[in-house]
Length: 146
Image 1 (tube, rainbow, N blue to C red):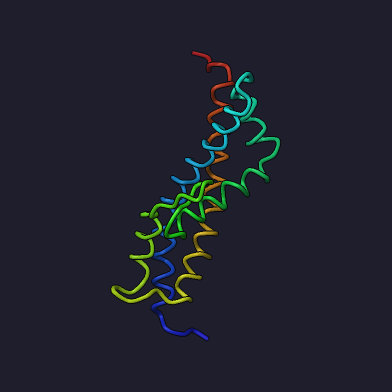
Image 2 (cartoon, rainbow, N blue to C red; image 1 turned 180 degrees about the vertical axis):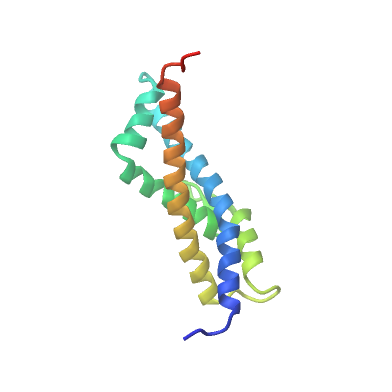
């Protein structure tokens, strides 16, 4: 069953639309985790936190970061721990480019946004973790010979 060519075109556009914001948010929230660790362990070097998050327990922290990235791409408002909510312009922007103008977004479209946001977030979080690990390795490495 093919079912109309519109869907695949929209899916491609949506993937394209999600990739860069997903990457940005993944970076932001990964550093957020590292900073939070730093605040909880003020006497330890931040490097220890980075090693814990990125190398020792990446699965656990990737899960936390991925959830936050998905929310940043899909939830029309973001709420903090004290349940203070504010509009989330990124999700609204993505939705405005995906849903028909001046019409409510269909359930199918919302599900598709969520599905592709989950896909993009996982890839982006893997990328963010790898990128920061590479930066760490680069800093720790001896300078190259002249």
